[in-house]
Image 1 (cartoon, rainbow, N blue to C red):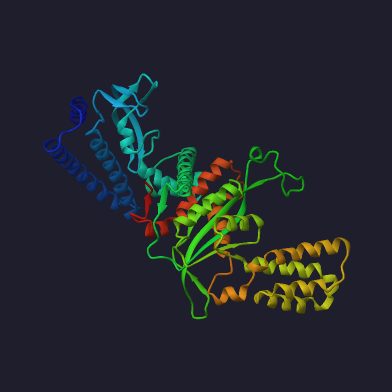
Image 2: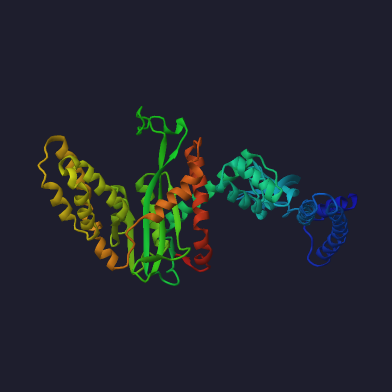
Length: 477
């Protein structure tokens, strides 16, 4: 290996390779060297086939050998350009940084560790140094390659960090500690969350104007809900909660899902368009979340869809967002939650209804299906209640009276609209719960926010792969 090392030093003294003969020579040298390595690897795999493990042993030998081979090849290709960009380069803060020396940096890649030798510059005015080559390769401020970072993000978003480290080792042959997996994933998630919020700010300020989706959706839905995430004691200090001691154990993350619908089935029930869902979530207050929801709705074509519908469980903060951000949208209370409240109402009146409770409830459920909220309230108020019981009845009926325009279920069904928020309920379980609410888990807000950002990106990836094509948005002048 003295020859390749000597040639690498000579290349660093000469600077970047000139196009033509230098690159052709490097390719020829790599081809010759790797051809011999592959022949050796084939012989070793053939011997492995003869042992007890047989095919599995041969697979292991070939995979390990190919990773080592690829890592060596990648290292030599990187060495072809040591990143010298002249005696001085801009530092990014309005000054010039001067070339100091060549410095080594070990980066972990999908092919294993690779040593990157690159030119190092120092800015006397700013007092910091940097390597332009790091930024060009996407490894500035990190020792993990973009390819391995993406792989690590998916593994860490799928399950606990220790398990993710094990999967990377078993499936990809990459050895990372659980802490390294955690830190890298949280850094990626934080960057993803910042990118989403930055995009939302640009859309809100009309500095970026998303172009109409193609094809235009007939119906666009925004479904909103919230769920608790278990937090460390420090994160919930001073917060009131539902526990017996009055202390909070969780913090609410707010989740919104946008999806489209163009068809109904043979019975007239709506069919959600396949892979049309995109997810956003945050621990921020409702006012901040509302801005994210508005930007995502705009990005998904809320201004162009024939029918825009916002679905929720009846919580006031959801309707405040819907009214403020999408004043022309149809608002619908999830039918399942409405039925739950009706069952609670029947239990409240049980001591008056006695044996007729089941018949009374069945009749009220029929009223609900027809959107007859006045009928429900009249049937409940015929009973002469006083004191605490009357207050409880007024509270229970207030849910229906305040949401009456959002409970016109017969009309909604005639229009072919969804009346259930199951997609966001499922999102709370699959995107949030399955990863962040496992037994014994306690999160910091920043850590949970980062992993949730990765989970939302993963859940939205199919839609983005299909719809997020070039020329779908434009900057304003």
